[in-house]
Length: 366
Image (cartoon, rainbow, N blue to C red; front, side, top):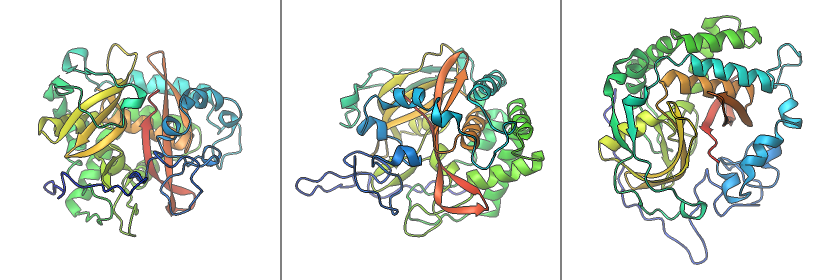
């Protein structure tokens, strides 16, 4: 494993030209109705919904309240569409099946935190017009207590070993060592031992997505760990790095949707929790939190994360939605509560015919 490389520029200046505001490349802030450009990482024009390539904060900035409409609207025309490349009604994954299988995965998360394993301090709840002001309204850390015995479980331990394998700045090519490749294999091997991932494979096998567990395992490695370029043509990113470890692009935090990563960096003093804009309805773990924070001086305006789930749960649920509803809201049920996951494919490169990398995956926080 590589030691963590701190970026220079904790106080990086984001100069303003008169009348112009800095805009992150994966954000719609200041970009609503901006003309489509194939060079953009994601889009904010009126057609992005129909092309499933909107930025993750499109509804916050361009269509306030749109997440609710999205969740209900896609159950009609879009929700009825068959998964790309599958025309057989037997192979199609219906909305009802997604609700059922997500409840099965939720019930199979035997490694999740117990209520006494984690104590959080959500503190200040930010209004929609307060999430972008970068004001720290919560004096205490988010995590008051975490039972770190959780981290000795095989899936947690192998997950944590992956987190320092990345340079967070996009535009810098990732150098993957033999040891890091072994760590990827170990993590995949450990999660595939769990009942949760075996249930996910059984469902996808039934739907003719994979012929064998080995085929599924190999595809997981490519879709999550395969490298592609978010900037300057360098192979500087992967779905796993973006979603679970987090990246910094042009002075803004990008991705970073994992509670374990957040806790470990907050404990080191590298993450500063500011506020939350959403707190899920669950009274046990996993729960969901929408939050604002800074990472070594780089800001995340709206991030969402499961709290207290096992690595295999998050990995499995995001994989399910990426396969079943790529580029669309994926409606699930966890413990009787509705939740939606948004995933996007990386459109600029592939790893085989019809095989696309994961660009991002996250919980939609209303």
